Length: 287
Image 1: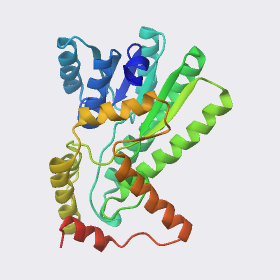
Image 2: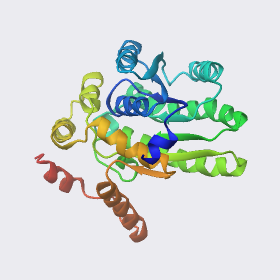
Image 3: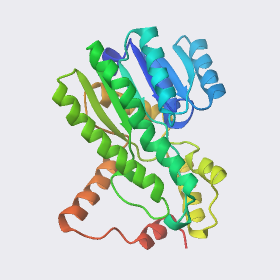
């Protein structure tokens, strides 16, 4: 029996952005392990489909339509979950979007929307769920989705990169704040590399860029995501096992993510400027 099968075989988990991509993989795997899973997503219909499919397969899940940019709605969700279950053993803040373009070309509304989902949404969930977890006093876990983009900087993805650096910093600070309380709450940061999803296609559909280089980079990333990205269920199994053993750093690919961390460490130690983006474009085959 794996550590995850022992630790996450019962109790309740909530995953934001749980109706697609990485979130859906996490939802389905946690339900397979035996947890009751709240599929929290802005797309309530898709969340209901996922929950119904889990139920039909013998698991326990239910949908919760939520826009994580609404702090009052998030607080209502926390109140509902704790009233229904008496606690929450696992909170995964996963909801996020992408955007392509040079910084000065990104629309103000899109910048605000991305930051509100990717970063503020994590804060709103922490603000609503963690005090209730502390009050209950039972062992629990809060895991926030950063990215390899939260370790380094990348051209033509500034809003996403900034948000994921913010999630990384928020999670490290949360880890320290929880230690001050003595509460039995594990805090972890999940750092995925490439897991198959629609994030790049959604970005281009919702906020198309007029920049040829940005579009070429996103096309290449989507191509590579399809060709070599991890299956969301496989990635979820790998990452949940590391969550279960209590890791702070939860990586989707130990080697690639460690390389990203190493590049960042070298840059800071040597006080070097960020990498030349032309080399990244060459690796992607973008001219």
